[in-house]
Length: 249
Image (tube, rainbow, N blue to C red; front, top):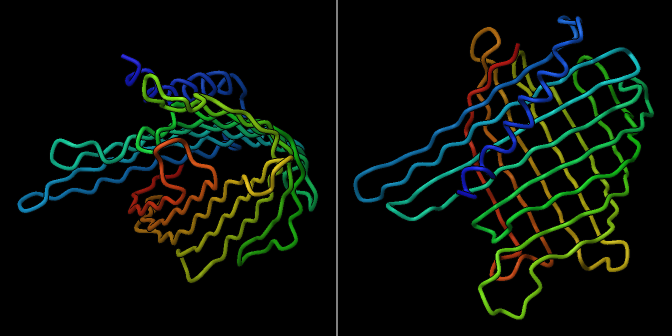
């Protein structure tokens, strides 16, 4: 029962926020992106991995931008679950088109394979966009956040089932046009704990997206995650590869 509720959480949040925002009569300021990826094989090896997600962005005015996103990934190899994670996020940008812009954010995620029942974080910071033009844009941001994690712990284990930290967050973003209809994107997030720099989370995402036709595009994505103090029973390093079909409108 708990499995169903956690998987659906990002899309419940997405539907609620989308419903609230739809009351604003600014259709030309909406940007909605849906994505889906499916990998599979049969015969000597048999596996299926499904990834689906959505991002809704509303530029309410030149001084305010709101974004809500959700993603679910699930996969099986034979009868063994090899992917079972989900995440959701909310972000509010003030003066998003300015060189310097403050922001607020909140994120939630879970990953059964990494023994992570739930991770919730939220904070505030500022972004500096040092390059923006027809060929792309680049920015760096810094923030302070509070992070709470709840782990999957075997009954009777001495390991703490949850922990919380105040963290710094440094993020870099680059979006570069490669050719007509093709774009490269880099995102790096580094989050060390306030009181222990050796306790950090590093996330890197790189993708190349090519327009197929109209508002439909194909994206190849690589994600790398390093949690220097991983959940009990999980490895510090994790990588994911995805091939996705995206639709924007």
